[in-house]
Length: 233
Ligand SMILES: [Mg+2]
Image (cartoon, rainbow, N blue to C red; front, side, top):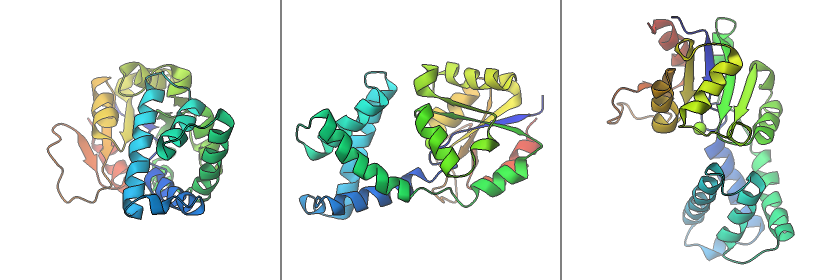
């Protein structure tokens, strides 16, 4: 069956999460006078990322809610106990700077334009619905997606097949008619394949050759997507 719709990952696929987070975190640490605590800005950013990964995993597992995971990021990064209110204020100051840095990848809108109206579009993210809805609105592309499904309201996070199947159901299409595009070869592309969709890995690393990632469709920029989808059996 031909592909009729694309389900999109959001962060680091359409939205430059890594770049926006990096810019926001650096400005936040500077503003809070925290950079001196680390050997270098890169080391500070590395610690920031490590704390984010640890606490986001607790959110994905259902151990923490989205706001609680943010509070825990503040406490863990500072290595101090903070009241909920203090943690919210501290993290909120980062969010302001992070949001000022929000940006889409330059190939995101051209790819959506090139794929419309030949394909329908939906978004499936492991983040929170309120967060991604607001983000896509702010970035001017929310209306491009007929559906937006996120782990918090779904109760399933990628790589669980239930997450992908919920996306297909929301579009009213069988998995065989839906492609999933994401920046992770494991929880996006391969997991989508395993759920019966056509998974596509957007590898923005710029590596000339794919690494040892067998059986995963790989593109290095979204401009390659229309050709790849048209060539799918
Ligand atoms: Mg992603």
